[in-house]
Length: 417
Ligand code: CA
Image (cartoon, rainbow, N blue to C red; front, side):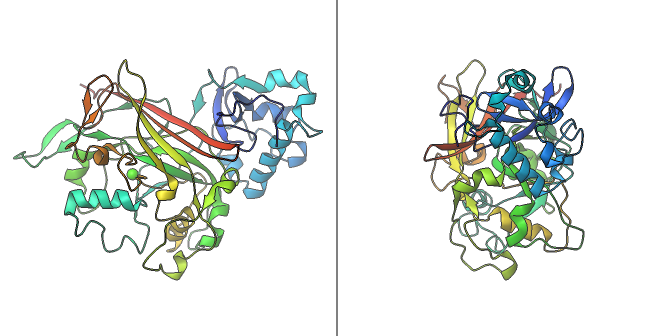
């Protein structure tokens, strides 16, 4: 496919991508959009101009504040929209928008300069723990090398229920949280702003259509329920987490904020980047077995930008490093009849690769502060400082096709006084 729109080769949003998001229209407020090359295309305008006539979509479906109503229509509608948008942008298709210059002024905006909004209303958020290196690294720090992985880890994709209300979109700053901590040397708990604020490099999947309470989704069916993938930064206060987490797991050390990228990337766009995951040994129970290549080869990067500094890359990782794939996460989540809902977010957990340089959190990069990270201006980081900006990027690329996920960029504000 070739677009009549000029798309730089390093663009995240070629004609094969067709991501979906929500932007703030200067006159009409939140509206659904896709991105193509350096432009955003207003889906509500295209709908009004009758470019989607044969899709029989409800009126106003792209003028909602989130994509949930469209997501609930199901996979045939998602695929029909994707195909139609590709036709409109295709240089070689008769129905191309190229032939209607009058419409174009109402439809396209330069991506730079538009405000992207939270794309989804998320009813429930679940965070997995699916990278073997991450789980091992954390296990070594907490329990030592011998018992690094818990006995259940290779038998089921471990997860906990997080909090959906504090998930924010890229660009929204995050404030350093206060909390209760007790370090090894503290005689008693202390009330303080966290001293070990961290990011976690994760990828999230958003459920388009869920299941009824009491029913299961099989690994074979699971991917048909995925509307899109996004980048997910699961902010963590390690000192608060360390003191509170036993016996019921993460709570206030995690739920003050998580940040998402604004564009949802469909599994169809990522299909050329399917790949085999790691060999699962011991063999998993039948309900977690699957067929075909269920992992994706998505490159990931974390950059940090201190106040007045250039961005500097501190981590390169890949979704291939996940032990558990998304189909298994969904099958496990519903094996007991738990109902997933439109908009639910399932995050992968921190995606750390096997070697140094591919660790997806400050906790691992600095080994709990023991090996500080040196930045170009000579300053050091054990954990994140106020005024730091953390940027997560993701993209899949081969044979001239690049499917970018965009970025999630967040500045850290000082704690409330
Ligand atoms: Ca996490």
